[in-house]
Image (tube, rainbow, N blue to C red):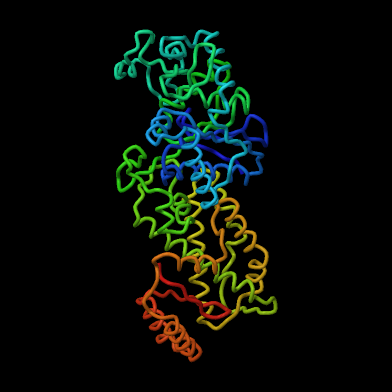
Length: 492
C-alpha cells in the first residue's frame, strides 16, 4: 500500500518515496523550552508521533530526530528575570516536556539534539557558508546573504522583492541587506556565549537545525516536519543554508502541522493565552487529547474548546464501552454455539478493518477518515448485537472465529499505530472517578435498578427494561449488557 503526503514544497500531494528503499530519515522541529508546555505544542508532537507510527506500520525503518532549542533570546531573558542559569531554566521545562510525552503515550525519537551540544558543527557550517560567500561578518555577528540564494522563497512561495517592500530595516550599518538573517550573534554583556573564529557569541535560530540535520543524517533527508508557523522564515532559512553549503536538496518532503487556536484566538506562550498540559490533565484523561487530534487532519487548524474536549471524552468512553462489550463476547464465545436464523455476520468487517483504516492513514495521514471508519464499525456492531440479544440467539460460528482471531489483532493495531486503547476498559472507567464526572445516585441504588431490569429482561418485558435504562441514564448512569452480565459506568 503506497503512502502519499501533501508536500509543502511542491504544493500538492505526491507519492512518498524515500532516498533509500525501506529506510526513512526524518527531522522534526522541537520547542524552545522557556515556559509551560501547552496543548499547541502537543498538537505538533502528536503529528510527529502519527507520522512515525504510520511509516513504521508500512514496514519502514525510521531514523528520527527532534531538536531542543536550549539557547535563545527568550530563554536568556526568562533566566535573567528569575536569576538562574539558562541550563536550569531549560532543564525545568524539558523535564515537563518529557513528562508530557510519557503521559500522552508519545514515542520518543532516537535523536534529541540540543543547540548547546552542537556548537562545533554549527561553527563548521557557518565557516563553509562564509567560504562560499553566502555569509559575511558584520559588527554585530555573522549574517546570511539571502539574495545570493536564488531559490529563496521556494517553500513559502514568497518573492524576495515582496519581502523587501514589507521588511523592517534593522539598525545595523554593517548589515548588507535588511533581509539577511543572523547565523552567529556576538555576545552582549551578561549573555551566555561560546568562542568562535569571529568572536564570542551564540548561534542564530535557523542555523541550528541545518547543522543538526547534516551531522546526524548527511546532506539530504526524506522528511522535514514542523508547525505551519515555521514555514517562513525558519524552514525557508534552513533550505537556504543547507542547500547553499552542500549543494543538495535538504529534504524531499516537507510536512506542516496546523496550528491550535483557543476559542478562536491564537494560542501563545508570550500572551499566556493557552491551556497548559497540567491544566488539561486536571480535567480529562490524556487519551482524550489524542482523540481530539485524530479527529481532524494534522494539517488543519484546530480550534480547541473545553466543550470539544468533553465531546471527545464521551467518544473515548464509547470506544472503551464497545471494547469491553466485544471482549466479553470474545471470552464467552464457544465454537459449538451456532445459529442459522440471524442474517449476516456481525463481525464480518473485522477481516478488513485494519486495511480500510490503513488506506486512510496512507493518504496524507488522514486519521479523521480512519477514525470515522472505526466509529461506523462500532455503530453497526452495536445495532446488530442489540438485535441478536433481543432475538435470544447466539453468535454464528464464523463470527466467533473472527472474534478469536481478528479482534485481538485489531486492538493491538489500534494501540501501536494510532496510540489509543492504552488501558483495559476496567482501568479506564475506574480512572474516570478521579475526575468530576460522577452521579448523585448511590451504588446500592444502581445495583438494585440493574437487578430489577435483569428480571424484566428475563421476563421479556422489553418496555420496562428500556424504561429503567432511560431512568438510570437521566441520573447519570450508563449501562451496558454483555454475556457476562450488565455493567455500568457514569455518564460523561
